[in-house]
Image (tube, rainbow, N blue to C red):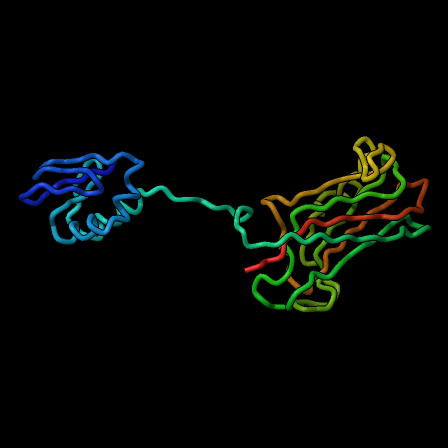
Length: 234
């Protein structure tokens, strides 16, 4: 609760509200920001004509009174995803499976000026699939790799998005054949992954590496991946 008291000897009107000497006015929550940003209110607090307090005490310090008004002003909260500071960028990856192991490895280097502020890509979602499908198709690893040795030895894995604390057979995601694939049929493996928190930032110069494995029987196929990304635009 915010209270305003007229401590002058004459009546005053602040933001359209007249208050007689020694009278107290209780601000509605919707009025607080209007009072906080009103030049006359701030001037008269400093001139000892108006005194602001909460539900228990009136403050004597000018700074405390102004702070109370601003602290109680509703704030517009903007999340990172709501900021209009990124441009949409779409990218694709494609790789053949090894005919012996059935493993496909695809990667790309995040573009931009290495070491620059906000240089790189904000990865918001990815979808992946094999051209031919089987219930045991899966993505086994998603890694951020320092391929060129920018901050560590070349090839160092800096971060993983698969759960590498699990046994190998439990890591990653199966590419479900029960979902519609990119050709709108049910004969294609398909999965969509979104980072927790909205996006994962990949600094310029570092690689996103995705490893997928085909089912144990049919080891020959093509692995595809689409990336939905943001590029910092401010």
